[in-house]
Length: 109
Length: 115
Image 1: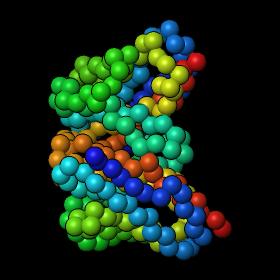
Image 2 (image 1 turned 45 degrees about the horizontal axis):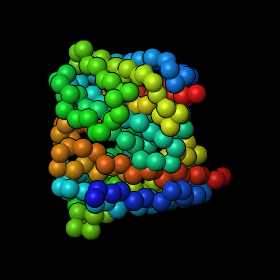
Image 3 (image 1 turned 90 degrees about the vertical axis):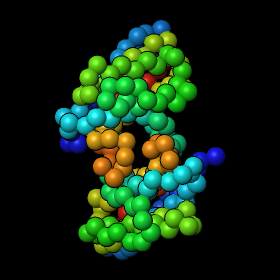
Image 4 (image 1 turned 180 degrees about the horizontal axis):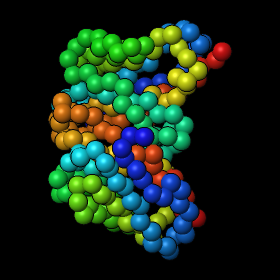
């Protein structure tokens, strides 16, 4: 079956670094997405990886290892506004996104 | 603002009611999606339309009926719903199904409560 696993909740301190892990199993693979969702709001796109390696975009970076079925989202210099849920989604061979349940990130001062 | 709007934002309906959710995208996209989001569960894809044609129906009960009159508008018609249908219903759009073209943009959702 197709499956995405990510931690349910994480806590970090303002100004610190946090890494949110995601493992996936899909029928075929067309890339890995990360979305951010603040409470009561729409998910917004953060990153897309289809090749192995690290993609950096400002304070956020995303890593993919296709051989391990593994990705992580790295958030640096954490700010209070980064408190949100982070959704991992893998796209299968039919271009369907398989979603994780999301990781709720709590930032403390 | 993501360019995708949804109305209403909140809806409370009885199990015998009929209502419709509306989604509109102002991005010139060709693909539109309905998702169901329940607390602490993964997003569930319900329906996909590509160039106004329904391409996927993920075993959704017939009490949910989608309609896509054009590539900018998407509706979800609801009738005789069950309490377990209470959830956040999200609409999304993308340029195409291929992620190399672009990602999905989501609307703010309709919070549905079935009493």
